[in-house]
Image (cartoon, rainbow, N blue to C red; front, side, top):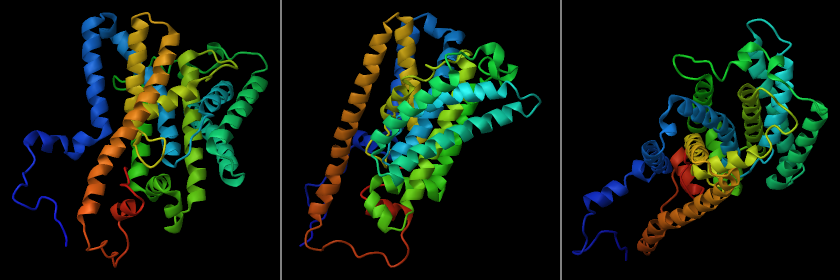
Length: 375
């Protein structure tokens, strides 16, 4: 006998408040993040006069944009159920090498060549990570921890104890942070472009759907004919490319680059992605989640700085935020899966539905992999 949900005289329709809470837009992690950011902004603006200044807002947005660019790349790797701990070293190495190289390039093509060099160098370093993970079969956390040390060592070697000064970089790069395009800083434009392009790739292309499938269930993705090894290489290369671009922004932001550039930046980037709702277990999250996480993290750091709280307290807060975000995600996942299990119990003796006769749609592929393709 089959028992239908809502059957019987005691069934009641959900209230308006419950229907609102069950709306897909309300249940998205991005909606909650936006609400938290708005709430913190209102409270900080009322409590701190320095927070309301245009200079402080511009500084905060520029800092968030740089973190967001690298966090978007990290998100793609995490969605594929991997992780890249070498993004900080990749950023630092790209900041010095590309910053030094563009100083010798003159003409109108200097900015274009600088961006291409940063993306290319970062992509090559990302492929090195993918080689260790896919070919050598090393766990991603071990492989990228090793390349973190390797790339950091290369950074010390290429700098040779010297420092890249702001006077050695071209004017377009030195002034990039302070310029304005249509009233908006270039850092923000670059972050928005990276967000739009990555969101399109993850939502509208086969690459994005394959990455979500790979992160949701690698074994099922392989049986479905997805080229999992290729997607792993592409994910790491994409992450490395955006880390290289972040190195170019780092050179513009700080001007002076030495062997310590980018140290610890990987923790900030991973914290931004995780706080934004990107699951460390893969297959869940969006590039927008990482951007919102970067905004929230930067806003909290900005408030602590205005309150003159120790930088060590900021580091403690970042670590605590990661723990809280992962715990909240785990609890929310269990709660969201309860209705699914309940409906499975209500199916009764009818058995599972028959397989579709035609080709699988993206939504059906997500269901076969154990969850929706959260693109």
